[in-house]
Length: 183
Image 1 (tube, rainbow, N blue to C red):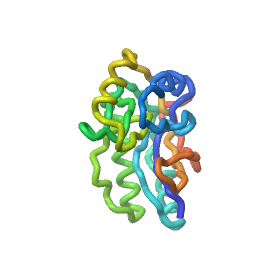
Image 2 (cartoon, rainbow, N blue to C red):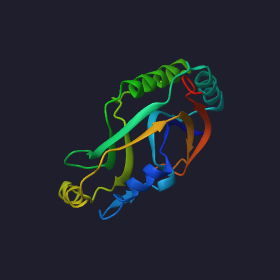
Image 3 (cartoon, rainbow, N blue to C red):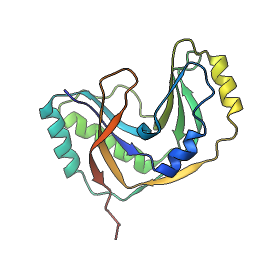
């Protein structure tokens, strides 16, 4: 069974900017630059029929225009027990609408609803249990100022992931271009 998720790819120039923040935190497993992305809907380990249903529904999704994305800072998941360092994505109505559509598609394909609130982000590192909040706070103060970085998402993708702890490598199985308003 393939492990699948939908998401947005990160352009190479943005990856280069993000790579400046990858390092200097003991206990961090940094995400490979080729695997940086914004997850829209984690589908999990699905059977081939479900994967094909999701693919067909994504192909039939309503046309949409490219989406302006802005990364606006560094943050952590986990609070006093940090689990991950990420680049946050600024609030974006078009992105929220796209994610909601992918949620509807997943449900229509027979998957359970996603219980977590959508928090758009680019995971930079996963942290082991020995990485304390103090170390993460020190890392965040030492990284310098995060200058906002923008890009235009021109397609969504259906990614597959190796069934392992930590995810990647990720492979774009199929892409779904945003063509509305494109000449």
